[in-house]
Image (tube, rainbow, N blue to C red; front, side, top):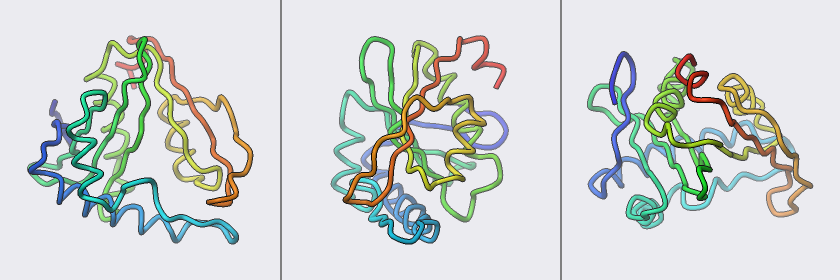
Length: 171
């Protein structure tokens, strides 16, 4: 799917090294935002070619490369939870391309590529105010704030978006 800005194409195993490198830069850059007392090793497998290859090959996941022209600038991992529910497992945009609206374009294209989805779900660290602002701007609402997980030292904010198709198309 393509229009102005970014396009999304299904990732292939040939993309795995580039996607892993972009994802690693993105989540290493996020570490500067972690509050005192919290840790951020990054989400599972963010820096693993093997992990990313397994997700690309998983038939219950949809892994997209985010393209600006022909250049991979990010990725989007979606997981089919069944019964019209999907999880936005991960979205990442290379730090050098952030704050230009590419994340918003990616989510809008996600909605268009998956019109059958009735409810989207995702989670993000409570301290990640930038992420939270972004998800709320894209129509997600908080459904739960978890207790503190002692391993990373922070709580997770769980979001859902169950917009009707007409509303998604307007975003």
